[in-house]
Image (cartoon, rainbow, N blue to C red; front, side, top):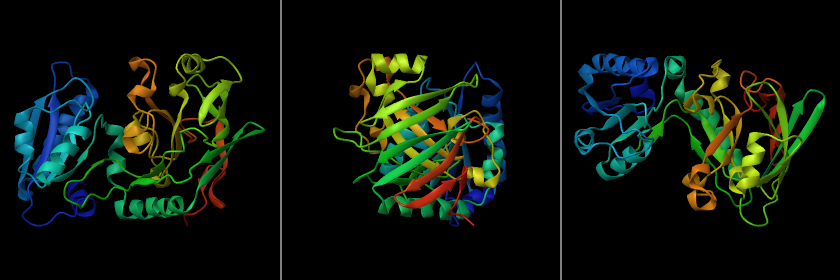
Length: 330
């Protein structure tokens, strides 16, 4: 598994140094212990690749600075893998640009995600690129959701927005990706005059579906009162349509792990809230209260929102999905 990732994802070259990171704590749950065990297993399998195992005390929050000593050690590597409880994506990205290594951040990785490490990432990259190339050409998207016998339409304004892709390939110096990978995504027009409008159904964990009304790229109302709607009324930035994305890992039979690191890559998803970290206009200052700042993904797959299906998803006139299945892959 790990040697295949070195070859296919990172394009390993003979003589390159590898560093595997994990964080530690006195209060480690089963997933945490699994990551430590996996880090040691991968290190053992990569000894002949000049691999080094590095641990550091957990930072306690996502994207907080990694201890200086750990950064000093990874600075000598060419490829870095971080199997951590708290996301190290931001500090590793800064260090990678400075020192020139490349790598993958895998925050919250658990045993359910292991099958995602065995997919053909060359094929993943082809699928993601196909969606990405269509996104590049189109200025809008239209999603038709089906809830029972009712259909709900959402038009998404993408004019002059640039898509991004997380295709699972990390062969350039200074680049940090998340693993598992596998999505093309874009921020809708979220400034004044946005034409994003329609209806967005969301299924709660208890099974109830709420249909939210969208106008000007924001949720403005709902067909019943919910905690989310109450929060949006108090702080409208919570209901900003932050992202439209198409994940492809569901094409390989993968199912929900309960962690966003994998789940957002399984199928189509729409996110609410903050998006300034990948090209949008909504950041911390867009929210009335700092505690309301969030980026929440809603993934439309059968195992996560079973009562809602994607009858059709279009980018421009190109049909991307039909009956919750991709129409562009053969």
